Amino acid sequence: MPSDSDTAQHIPSAAKLKTFSADERARIFAGIDATPGSAKPDPIITVDGITRSFGGLTAVDVAHLEIQRGAITGLIGPNGAGKTTFFNLITGFDKPNSGTWSLNGDALGKLVPHQVSRRGMVRTFQLTRALAKLSVLDNVRLGGRHQRGEHFLAALAPWTWRKQEEEITEQAHALLRRFRLEEKANDYAGSLSGGQRKLLEMARALMCEPEVVMLDEPMAGVNPALTQSLLEHIKSLREDGMTVVFVEHDMDVIRDISDWVVVMAQGSVIAESLPDRLGENEAVVDAYLGGHHDQALEFDSDGNPVGETAVLAHEVDEAIEETLHAGGDLSDPPPTGAAPGAVPGRHAADTAAGEDPR
Ligand SMILES: Nc1ncnc2c1ncn2[C@@H]1O[C@H](COP(=O)(O)OP(=O)(O)OP(=O)(O)O)[C@@H](O)[C@H]1O
Image 1: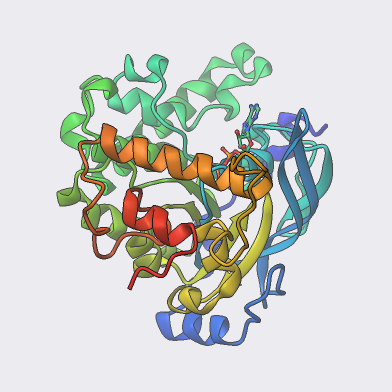
Image 2: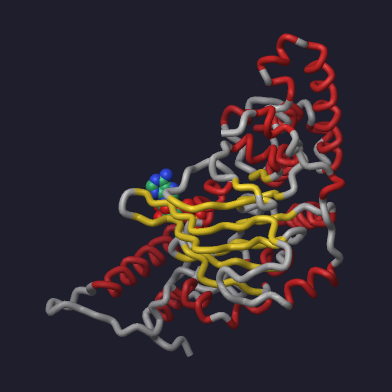
C-alpha cells in the first residue's frame, strides 16, 4: 500500500483541471452510445468487474463503467439498487469482493479513503454527531487533514506544520466565502439548516482540491428555497473543471444538471443515457415500475400470490401503508411530475399490478 509520502505528489492542482463549454459537452455526449458500459472519449474513472456481496445479496455487480472527465454524471436507480455501496467502494470506504477501478489510469483498489482523496477523488458524507459538535470552520479545516502536519515526522519539525495550518485555515475561509457560510464560521455545524449542511459537505470535500467530487443525494433534506442555489454551486464545480458524480432521486434535478445519466438496478448498470432521453429507455422504465407491469400474475390453489407476484403484492401493501401513514388518500390520483413508480397509493398500485389506469 502506498505511504502518505508516496501519495503527496498526487494532490491535484487547479492547473490540471480541464473545463468544457456547454456546447463542447453537448457534442461529447451526443456522440456516446446510450448503452451500459459505453466508452467515453476521455474517461477520468474506469471501473471493471466490481462486485460486493452482503451474505447472499449481491449489492454491486458492475461489469464496466467509464465516467467522462469535466462533466456531471447523475447516478440513479430504485431504492437498494447499490448506488451508495458503489460510491463507498470506489472511494475506499468499503472493499469489494472483486474488481478494479482507476482514476486517470492509476489503480485505486488498495487505497484507503484519505489516499483516494489525495489522488483527487472525494465523496461527501453527512454531518456525523462528532462533526456536528465542531465549528463550521473546523469542519472545513478537517477536510484538509492528512496533509504534511499529520505526518509523524512533521511533529519533529513544527515550523513545517504551523505554516501548513495557517494555509489550511486560509483555504477553509476562502471555501466558506465561496459557499456563503463565512458568517457561520464559528457556529456549531449542528446548528446549520439542511441546505447549509450540504454546502458545508461540499466545502469540506473541496479542501483537498479534488478532480472528482462524488455527491450522495445532495438535495436530500434541502429546503426548496435553497435548491436553486445548491444546484448552481454544483454546476460551479463543473465550471472549475471538476468532474461530478452524484446520486439523486429527484428527476427534475437529474434533468437540470446532468450531462449524462447512469442507471443502476439490482447492483448493475442497466442503462446509460442523455438525461432527456431517459423516458425512452425501456430498461429504465422497467426498473422504476419494478418490471412487473406486463408479467402474468401467479397464485397458488388457495389464491395466495406466489413467486414474483408475492413480491409485487408485498410492495403494493407497503406502498399503501406508506401512503396511509403519510396521511394520503388512496383514491387520490398520483401527483403530477412524480418520479415514475415512486407514487404509492391505489392508482400507482393498480397500475403496477397490470391494470390500465385509463
Ligand atoms: N452494510 C450492509 N450490510 C448488509 N446489506 C447492505 C449493507 N449496505 C447495503 N446493503 C444492501 O445492499 C443493497 C444496496 O444498498 P445501497 O444502499 O447501496 O442501495 P442504494 O441504491 O444506495 O439505495 P437507496 O437509494 O435506498 O439509498 C441493499 O439491498 C442494501 O440493503
